[in-house]
Image (tube, helix red, strand yellow):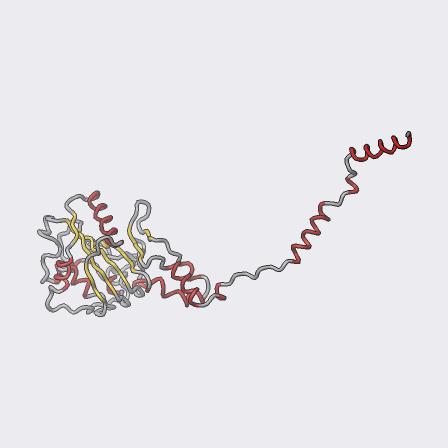
Length: 286
């Protein structure tokens, strides 16, 4: 009985005591066995863009550089020259093959939408910082809002429209116009003297873009271009005030046909450097 009780007490003591740490396997040894198992697993090969078919790469380029087919270069509350929607032109600098495959998308798959101050006699209508000449020469589609709301007591022959001469690749152009109705120097609108070239802004533009460019006028109600025009109209109303109106499509079309001896495209590509020859100095600091 005594031996049995002693044996029972010994087993109970060993069950209640903590195990000796020296008898346990080290954590590094346990981890080593785990790491060995992980190291033996087959790793997935890295993803390589050029392993994709060219059709899929093209879709990636289009999504990155032309997500909606429209690029708006209009001022916002925080930026003077904002680009919406955001694109990633730095993709073209990734490598030579990407550049060769995607270079044309940015300028051929997007319609560039801008507003120009057509009554500014001091600077080119299109800023070099906004669209350098190299870019102008590659653009194929544009929407241009001719902003004729500023005070103006001159002729359109005094406006620097030379940047339009650099649009040598332009395929489509849509023109719209806003103006201040009943302005002192604009009895009706900038469109009321169709026959005189120096007072016909539409004619001045048509002389400078290629003759092959397909030209249309106005905006489609509810389109993104129409939204842009309404945004600029509200900005001008808050700024200079007055009765801001959008030029009618019929008036724009009549202006495009108003000058009898008009030769479309006669000045396209005429100026080698559109940002230096007009003023004799670079305007890139603007």
